[in-house]
Image (tube, rainbow, N blue to C red):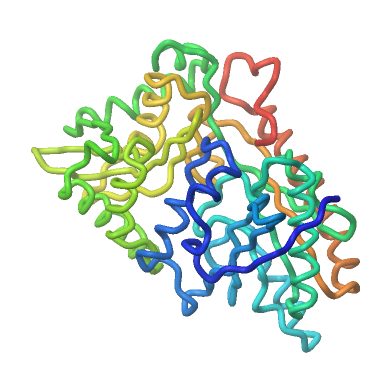
Length: 383
């Protein structure tokens, strides 16, 4: 394992954008300096909400060789890898679980690089340096959420692995939406056609615009839809209008808005981000209720976009087995965790093993009930 000097940063702008972005291939928009720094600049991360930036970087001879987007967390909100039971267990034994140290993209359950480095040994060196620093600072735990499979080798002994399932659409090279439908089982195909026809009969028309094509009014409408959806569920919207506007400026071709118009007005919308070969669905909202509108805006329009643009994968967000009937298949996601208290770590190791087996069994059951006429010879792998 190579050495290096670990540095911690309370804002991402302490690390030059060019140096940060040189550590990844640019295919995942959520790890871009512009995305992560934009969250900080535009009021989306606050200690009062449980997010305090504490990014890690590894330097050797004055060169940045590895880095990780990291945060001190005073709660477990906005992570999508649920560990509240771990916190409760610490509390019952009179130990503090928070603050913990989290490597993740805030509010984004999207698999992507977390230990940024050009060389595998530098990823491992960064993980080791962060683990030692976490212990030195007396933190209860260190977590790396939604990392890709190739980063697993960076974690050594004493790390706990957790798996979960998301539902992703895989492009098999269909020329258009009708060709995709033709590969579905007849009942599934009929249901989707009926859903789409109902939305069209209700007078909704759709268009996709990129960030550099979106007007201020369209960005404001999308932000209103986002806030309305959060309010409907009794949650606080963490993202700001300024952040939406920042994405349109800083990542103009990676921001994709699906806008639904009715009677000349924007009535619903979905916000997506585009990566190298993947479309990521993030947020949606509407001012009118209509059967099938959510499925059209959040799923079918995204599939249409991927087919037009030649993208390979559509990740519409976490959870939701209802996506399977619409062509999305289960893939594994993963995270690694280091718990400082040895006794806790030993107890949790068995629990994590059981959870992984249950998740794998669930995925196999879902795959057996897939919606296609034939499952691909190579069903979607763990992402």
